[in-house]
Image (cartoon, rainbow, N blue to C red; front, side, top):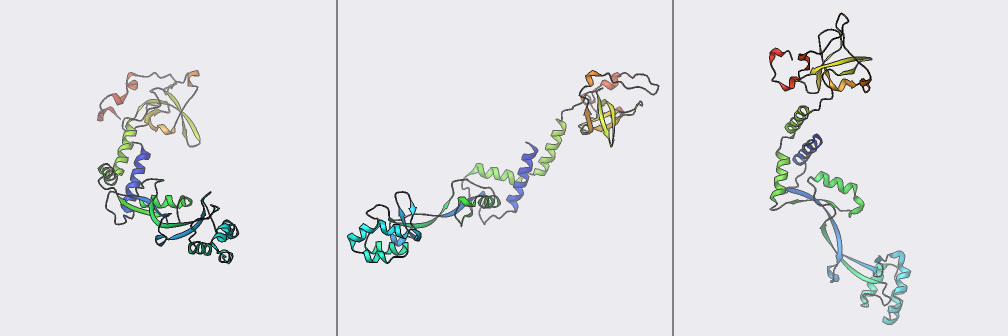
Length: 284
């Protein structure tokens, strides 16, 4: 598992533990709940009455009052309510006249009384959220998709053992410990970039020094024992501070002893200590 995945699960565990549970039994999840309307046949059951154009779905408003009267002109002549229609100044008044004269839709086909009831629905656009915080954030960022009263709604995943087990793993795993384990694994599997005897450049403050790798440091993954002088002392150096010499193949770089003679690699220096058991007397 990647370090980023463990960090995500660690934060998710905290949000689940500290977030609002809405008094909902686990395994819980949240969905977006909003109000909506749907047609209803009984006017007495209606929460809202609209006048619509069934041809294109346009809802007539008070700004359309002259067009509405024109649509109902033939019906008014037939039903004898021309005067009542002429006195209407709002769409609601027009609807009242239509209901009084039992006109549900106009002869022109462009004006129809539509009775609607309000109800709550769960949005099927996004699916489930694991925390109320995430659900609320989604609503805020996508407000234009929902009604003004949209809000997080808590539910229980009833008889859903796989989902329950997944949330139990997230909530009860020590992700800090897993994070440390992941770090150790990454260090153990770290790819070493430098070979024994390879020259490199080391930046020491404002100075740049040439060094040669003596061997890897078996106790510090990603580190090497390196020579920087004519003496036998090798300094532990972090790989992050070492730079490869890209064109080293074009040069012969050797290390000299205190007397100025060229040194040669001994069999001891060529041993890879990671291939052998550690021992206190090996000098690591």
